[in-house]
Length: 120
Image 1 (cartoon, rainbow, N blue to C red):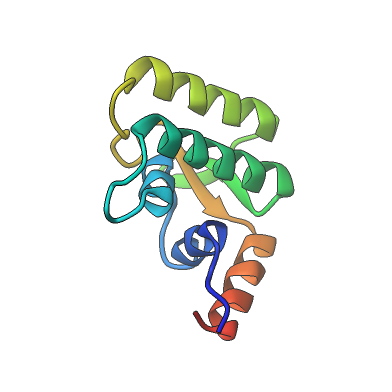
Image 2 (cartoon, one colour; image 1 turned 180 degrees about the horizontal axis):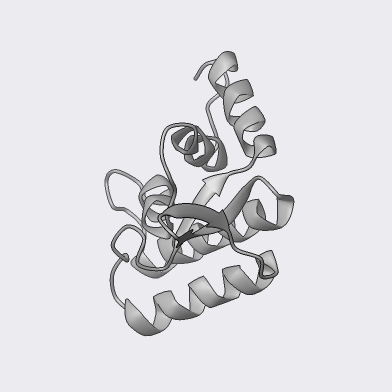
């Protein structure tokens, strides 16, 4: 059996719920907490950045009671989220949604479903 990647675990959660940078941090942080916070943060930011640039997730915002895709460049959104994490939450993980919300795109859903079908 092939183990799932952090990216696959993150996208599988995106099949069921909205995503956030705090969820990304929980996916990349080992259960035994054997890595430094700064390394976990870097891994979470890197994973979210790659998924945004690959078009597997998109940033969303609340508009008139519904959710709408943010129109800014995905790279700029990733930089903004990383900067805000460093400035507003320098020594801890942000609360869910504090840096914005994300959701899977159809490509992200396909990737997640393929991983689920393959098993763990």
